[in-house]
Length: 406
Image 1 (tube, one colour):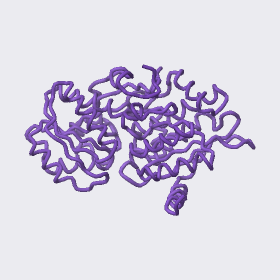
Image 2 (cartoon, rainbow, N blue to C red; image 1 turned 180 degrees about the horizontal axis):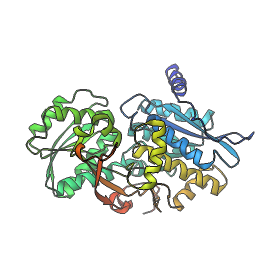
Image 3 (cartoon, helix red, strand yellow; image 1 turned 120 degrees about the horizontal axis):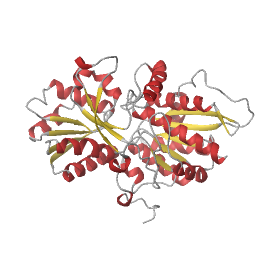
Image 4 (tube, rainbow, N blue to C red; image 1 turned 120 degrees about the vertical axis):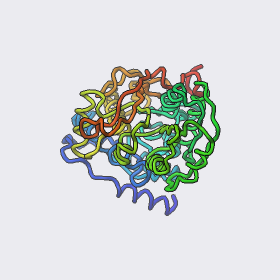
């Protein structure tokens, strides 16, 4: 291992937040069951994931009683910096020397794909709760990977199809220049074309770009009715903010945020986001159960949870149930039990996990309402449409997952 990699690992571990107070720890001499999150703790996806993802997993552990198989549960987190080499080094270190039983999160899709490769080799379950690329359950799938929350195919199907059918039949894309952006652009283009629209062009911006002015000007000049943002986190926030400052949507041009979350609305403000449409599987106030869980979360984090936070709870909860039912942390037995058991929690009801590892969450199309219509704090969104898991996600037969039987 290089000196750089050693420093990265030690720095990542040192950056991990302390365990939440109040977590029930079983009094046992047995070694702990370890759950490890590789997250973006300092980059563009920190707010949509980051520390909130750990809090969500800690909440799942607390609700489970703090132990499983008469062993205490330990939650670890490190900063993978959205870099595949860092993610690979951390994943190997955690599995080989620290005995981590399950890996979670992954943040950027490029990092997640690297983690998936390590987990495939090591036969360790990877609960994919950060990366969005649909390749996770496609050509780069793993028998030990389970993909939660969303993917680029479902995001494209929800927003891309809806806006195209509503009259936005010409598109131009501003795309994050890495695996996630490519996949979201690809799946969105396919959705637009399938709905009868056409794509006039695309431009790619590096991850972490602060100034999108040249990209926005090029998009406006294309004459497209819809400008699709195939990015996320602070990249998407900067795009939306600068588009508003330039008056980009004046004259009827629509701005399509293909991966947007409640934390993005908090950061930008409801007024800036009025009229934006986005797709995801969770909204903090969607049901009384979701709101009750969100209230618990906000007691620690102050801002409402997004779908990644809710998805990390769901993934951790479902994994722990399977471990208890199997009586072991053996990856092959646990992943089989997870796929055979419907997902049930505060926002999923009898949701299936497919053979390729795709969790078939229902997906929702949300519209950001005018600030004047908000009735209480964080009352941001109105439900516009809904897709079942079978409607939202790519058909199993089209994914190209190597281990799925034809």
